[in-house]
Length: 124
View 1 (cartoon, rainbow, N blue to C red):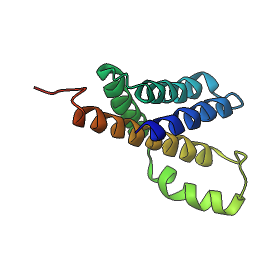
View 2: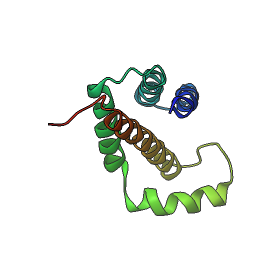
View 3: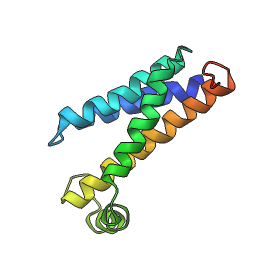
View 4: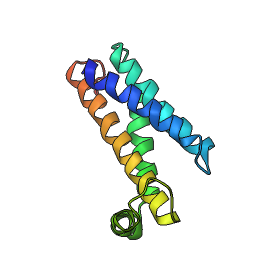
């Protein structure tokens, strides 16, 4: 888990850095920095239940909020047509934001299950 957490601490920090050029960095930079800090805490075996649960719930709600059929289906077509890392339209941007939140959600969920299995977080 230490290697996994270290990798995602760096990955999320890089995601946050890339967001500084985004039209709305005040929203997305903290979102990815939260994931980086959460990964750093797990790396150092500091399991803060409210932070882990906050990440899981927050990222899930964010992904559900952004999700539309266009974001899911059209995004792939747009990316294949444009084959560029630059944002060409709103659908591409929303698709990338959606998948970023899905990645954050999955990583946070992994931390939650790891913490539960190590009895760092208990229910009941």
